[in-house]
Length: 303
Image (cartoon, rainbow, N blue to C red):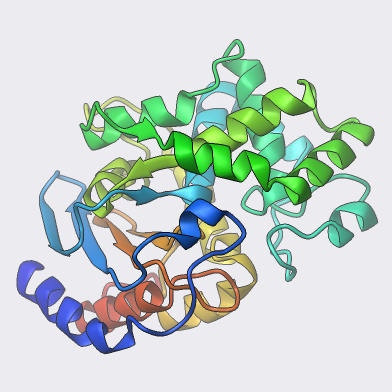
């Protein structure tokens, strides 16, 4: 399928929507980003890349990192993580304390913050304390060896991290963290603060469109595990708007409050869109609209 003309058309059609919504203000460094930017990239499982707009501009990946952390835990530790994290949509904001308390410290899924903290804790344990496994995976799969943690974003997030601190301490009080709280929080913040472009993330996500096969052909995950991550992205990947995202886009997706969204067409390609202005659920307004247009024009959907 020829994507380039379509992506250029999408950039043009999305421009009138770039003023809708607001940039994330929970992390001051994110609030300082130029808001009226938009990029889109598609990477096929064979490695062909098509991009348009601000697709080479690095941005803070934030919760998109949760997909890569979960993939590493499943690859290195199998299915045991599901003894500590459920696999159900939350229906609540991604940083909610209420549901976690009601369910005795077992997070509803790995893509809300509490669940991601448990996954990060397990990743530290199975990686001998290595705190940058997500960054290494992103570098390897994107082919971009200079990807880095944005230290300014990480420092800003550390200074305004009260809700995640509360979640982590509550998890620890319930016996659902094995490593020191501060170590888990530092690792979590650093993986969220990785800066990457749409092209980087589309390339890095290809294993989800290739039955778990890495860039070099080796298996990161088996097809069964890959299916499970994609299923979790459909039901839980876009905060408490997963139903609306599935209705409009029809693909597995994972968003972050930096304005990025990755989406997967199984057995075909991975897509990344980015635009910093968010809707009420924390998803990029222009990004969701662009993915809606992409699937509508191409017919590429899992439904």
